[in-house]
Image (cartoon, rainbow, N blue to C red; front, side, top):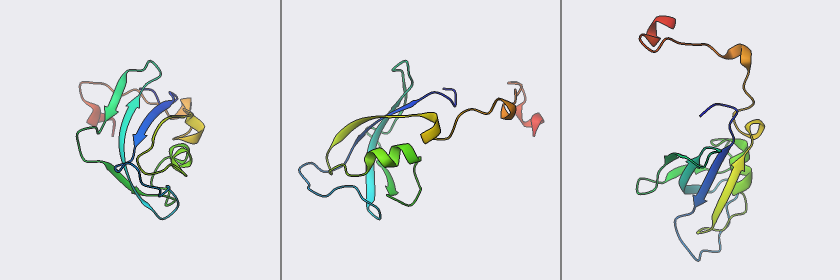
Length: 107
């Protein structure tokens, strides 16, 4: 996936029927699916250990954390994070081609 591609997240909290909401300082556990624009599955932690982070501590990309704020525990949400709300737009001057045969040579 290229850096400028939008990231699609689907997040489900661990416990259903819980009235707590995601807010700053809360330890959050996520089951995630990351998909490319083509809907191709890029990454998931379903069936594995949940992704855990402390909300509001800038441990997640800003666009994802913003969309998770206020979700109730157990809710599911489909989230699209634009490049500027994630890792930023691609900088063509920062792109470097690396030979596949010996990438360590470039360092």
